[in-house]
Each structure stands twice: as C-alpha cells, then as structure tokens.
Picture 1 (cartoon, rainbow, N blue to C red):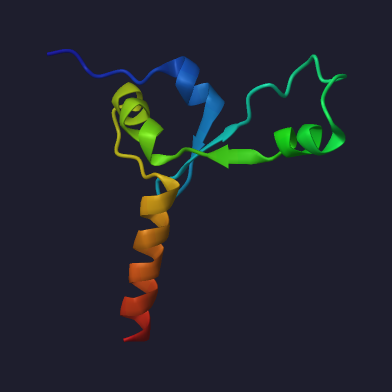
Picture 2: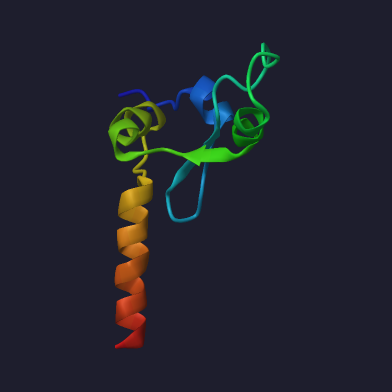
Length: 85
C-alpha cells in the first residue's frame, strides 16, 4: 500500500501550531485594495485560525488530526482546570 502524501499546496499556505490549531492568511489581501477602507485593509494583515467547519476537509488533505479554534480553547480551559485542582 502506498504512503499517504499531504497536499503540498495546502501545506505551503497554512501553519499548524503545536496544539494543532490551523493558521492561515486572509483572502482578498493581495491586490485591488484601492476601493476598500483602511480598517478592512488592516484586518487583512492579521492571520486567521480555521473554524470547525473547515477542519474536517483540511485534516483529510494533510492526513493528520487538526483542531479548530473552538476545540483548542475548550482543551486549554480543561487543562487549566486540571492544573488548578
């Protein structure tokens, strides 16, 4: 059986954190910005984290488990409770 290969185009566009969260650049931030407001242009500079709706497709393309922002926050909160107890 051949090895599973991750999707290289996706792998170049995203960054997976140590906890498994997926971070990527915002769309619409490259060109055609003259008709957009300054606050919109500034918001395009910030990175985004993948939400729960995208995680299933991304993890299938990369062949590894990933976490959405919501699940990562729940996991971190649970770990803090365990540490305090």
